[in-house]
Length: 204
Image: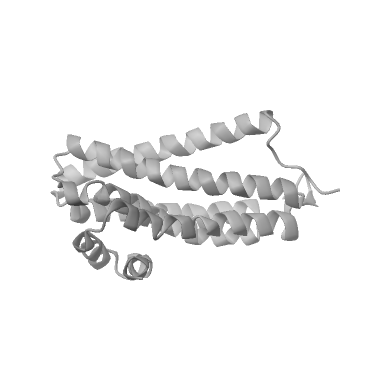
């Protein structure tokens, strides 16, 4: 429960919450497993309900996916999120060595994983908008959450990694670049899956 309480604090008082997250010094598994499997359900379940029950505009008319098609896509989304957050955390930890972040064996991989988990939390929460999957509304809401996530990266790295502002700024830029590359990779992977037949099937 202590770890889950950080989810609220990261919105209400991020600076203070980053200090608390750093002080916790939990293991990689504790910080990852206590958050990501639960938060990843939000976009997956919301998107499933939205595209099967509410529908979305496509070609000027309302479209819905079949439950089976939507379920497959929701499961793929869920595991892609789990993998994506894990890999982002690992990239952050790997880059930490280049920026002189000191670590110890007991808490190795904690800082990068914690950063990846908590900076993606606003996007997970904002994904509730997928219950009503209007394209531009979803883009606007999730886009604003993404901007807040960028803010959290710049605010969190100096505190979590215990480094100066100038070095932290460069580190944050590298983290954001990696996150963008991963996002593009997911988009390309989605197109490849669609060409293999794992794509949306519309209700008639």
